[in-house]
Image (cartoon, rainbow, N blue to C red):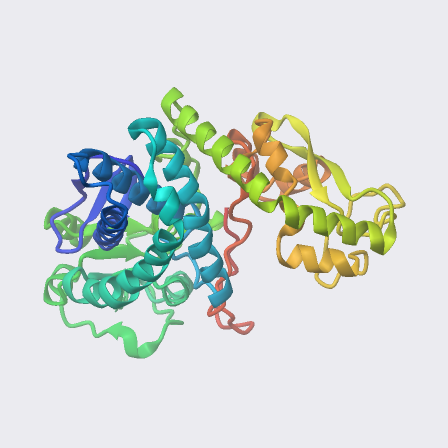
Length: 447
């Protein structure tokens, strides 16, 4: 999101670009451009109907249309519509597609009103929403998806055939990154283990460099846990890199495609030399401004839902409807988080902290409903306004659990270098990686 000068990361046909120090595929940039173009044209059409372009005010109309288009696309990104870490259900997809215009249109209206004076788009919100929703769906599914596979293919070869390679295969099948196509697996001489689909293993008849050239590979993913002892064909990888082919290790692949990193592949050197943990004044200002604006709007929009849920909670069991609990936040400081109560009042009557479990008997009937719809999390918007949380960030945990997890999970405390979030990653579900005991499976947890 945002403006940036994009520089190519390689000479391959389906390049990755660095945008604000984030790797963005050419396919995603193509989708962003197509959606911005459609939204701009749609709003210009609405404004023409309203007479905004008459009398030499084309400049104001273009400013309104551009502001609207960029706002909607940015919010689409914030709601995860451009990150294919997993396949969204129809309900989740529809909700996110609707939320972006619902929040973006008022934001665009207020912004352009401040820049260009009274905005007649306010009289045409219904048409603007209709064009935005229908148009974006058509652009994505009738234009972007068919063209990306043909014009911007990103052909991937996985180096290795063991459990890590199987993990990459399963994650690609689950996430379906735009434009990324798994060509096959290249078996290593010193690793005979094969748990991937045998039909996708490339027959060994040529060197790695020749195989990459013959198959027109754009990226090689190194999916090998033990890389010492001459396991990797370093000379072949160097030749591929010198020819413009991108070489990616397992940690960077998952970070780029899924926004998560397998804990088992984390190394101190990766954390030290990586591009994460960037903190500066501009980044802090932009993030805080986004948190304030979005959380304030969501509080207003969700107020009727919160009131209704509160009434149902009070009617079911009485007692307080807002649940307060101590959590660990930025730099290890504790704060009080607010939630709608979804458990019985005596859920922890013995005073001991306990994990919530699936089909937890402590959860009330109303609580089960609001948990499923994430309505119980809405009061945390107040924590965002107070600066204790961010809209996007790691899940805040209780001090008792933090002490336990810090002992069990490497680098767990690193998450406290940023503010906890209302939305974020908890655990990466790879449904296709359910292997039986003895299949050589690797159970990966994700940071």
